[in-house]
Amino acid sequence: MAMKFRMSALALLWFSGASFAAGGEGLTVPVKLPAYDPARAACRAPTGLQKNLVFVQDNKREFMQGAGRGLEAAARARGLSYRVAFADNDPALMIKQLGDLTTDRTGAIVVAPIDPPSLAPALKKVIGAGAYVGAIVPPPATSVLNAPQYLTGKVLAEAAANYIRTRLGGKAKVVLLTHDGLQFLAPRFTAMRDTLRSLPGVTIVADISPATVDKQGGYRTMKTILLAQPNIDVVLGADTVVLGALMALREAGKARPDQFLGGIDGEQEAVVEIRKSGSPYKASISLASSIFGYAMGQHAADWLEGKSIPQAMDILPRALTSGNIADYERDAAHPGEVYADPARRASYLTMYGNICFDTRDNYINFPWSSETR
Image (tube, rainbow, N blue to C red; front, side, top):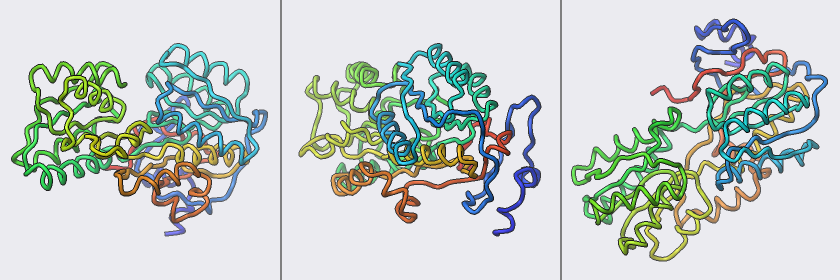
């Protein structure tokens, strides 16, 4: 097995059936990456780049703020300067920011793309300049961070299904607040439907994507749903939209302690709700953004030193409940300690493939996922 992982990157891709696209397009054919090999030999370090890390951030939701805290802590630990380029949900501004970073010879960026197709040409220029590019989900990037999306949705849906069986007598009216228009997130909602379909007493009374992925989007959508379905038992979706739905339920006098509201992202406001006695909010699926942010910051520093880093990384979902939140908050507050402990790190992160400055043409330019669905 060790011999297999020490093959050249080109040989690995040949055996995997992938191919290079012409014109610096990276890997456009999906390939199953092997486990990351930390013993892979280092290569040349990039030259002429600044020793800095910039987070090109889409918006200020808590999930991204957590990623930024992890990135900043890693940059501080590794002696990199750090700053945030905040795009405020403006795709054109984000493209301009990336152009400026290429001109400035920025050494490392992590990006949360707003509009992936329009941003791709600018990201390819940064990659071509030799910088580290870490992307939170959509490619292209030298290193892609994703979650096993189907598993993420399944973990939340199974928590809800268990609650329905044990606390609601097997019967429930369910609202799914989806993001099916976002290709990379759609599998999590497929998993929710698959899981809930196994419960004969469950009726999905609304399966809808809010116009905006924020509290206001969830609030407005739930207000409309309540006009037709005033009694809801379960609401599932991203934390930020489910928190908006909770606002609408409370405003209408339809929030109940025996409801199950559950979200994804481990948003701090959701954690506060879970802690409250009698709150309908029962679970949030954490993707530990400060921990993956710290890992990406470490990989950025390694890249600038010429080391081989993962091509891709999974952040593993875990259901936060009132019984385990304290341990999670401890880890999220100290991502450096988690990263330094292999066992704790492995409970949050799984890493795949190898890439370094010399093999940067192998960057991922397809919708990568570790899941085979």
